Image (cartoon, rainbow, N blue to C red; front, top):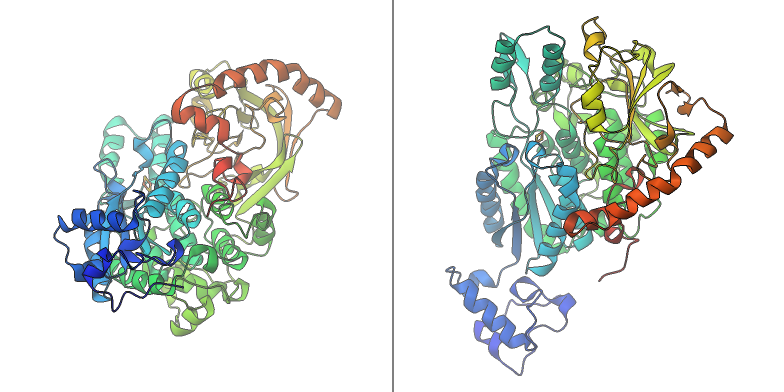
Length: 606
Ligand code: FES
């Protein structure tokens, strides 16, 4: 039973004959999560003494407390608007009679985290969970945006299980170079490939660099940040327009104010993520992922998020993504699969228009953070399409790609699965292809040899990169977009079948098979035994990824490398600090690359 503090006088807090709280679970506001001094009255007395140094009155301190996670960092341009968002959230909280208190957690930017931001995602999720658990708050607004921040916050927030309200920083505006629109980071990669192939010179690439990220905010295409924003909206945790309103828009600030107000209501109703997020919520999120042609990283993040939920263990697997893909067309014409930018998606109606279009495929009974079902939210906000909206957000009858933008492959080198973003293939013939492998054992090997004119590359070659999986290269780098060898690039080859156990940026495109599992670093990995000259077959329609050797030969090669690979990993696992913890604890791509001990299955904690 929740405490009722309405008639409590400030001095009652120090009355030794009255309990501070009837039970820890019933505590609210400042009485939550008291620091342990062995004397609850003293703990509260001390807490109030210190917070009063910040000028708070007893009236303010009696209100529901809304924590606001501040992920501002001068390294992180994707989060540059966080200070303004915090002010707007505070306004929304105060208008509803709550007390907003902001606090910092780790901030991660893709280009400023070595070895990768993914290496630190789980650390950020621990930071998020533990700070929500440790500090007194009745709900928490989690401000994030850049690729790994939103998944980290959702993972930590679901584990902490207080009411959580994500608030996205929003996408950046597109730039322009000689009349052509540009946006990070699809156009970063396209133009870099042109530069490598000698199509543009050093002056042009320098000028383009000035325009790729012209404002603050997250990457302006359907990369991982935009994908996670759409998924968060599909889960019902943010207002629908909150997925796409530009970072620099006044709409973004109004969404922040609304989020603050929603947080007070969610706190009062004790609307926790483990209560409102159901299997249906995640099925909706995966339907949206397929319909937007979202980032392959979205699959890893959704698996990590869902595996934090104690009631959803085993309910969603890689197979779920493939099953939903088979009945979900891709509707959004955004880069890297299409032509437009996130601002276009927003102007076309954004998630509201998309959810209305997808309505026949959605579970409308899924709950949202507002306490209304998705169906009720859509009923209250009708959307009438117009020519531009159907150009960017296609109707079900005229999709951009008929089905399965994201496909799960299996075969003898990927018994636990692999992913391909079929809609981003630049040469669709490669979606059914057999060719001889050219194998790189790791990133250093690839960097040293990819442009070697003597390597036996042809346009039919299958480029294979090993040792970029979760353990093999901690953080599972986004190196799956193996560059086209320069000698082929200069002949006009723009796409090749490429395979790895790593990830790829959501902003990248090509015929790229990723997340091959179990990864090559593991002693028992069949992917680890692929050699240059082996023939590999990929058949997306048949969901097949096969190394054309006999089962006996496959087993013989695995046995041949098992001992040496086991010894190598034993030395790796013995490393100190966070890196050692990561190596010993991280699970495989199909489980979300989370730490085993953080998953709901890992251990129980109240
Ligand atoms: Fe932050 Fe792309 S670098 S979203």
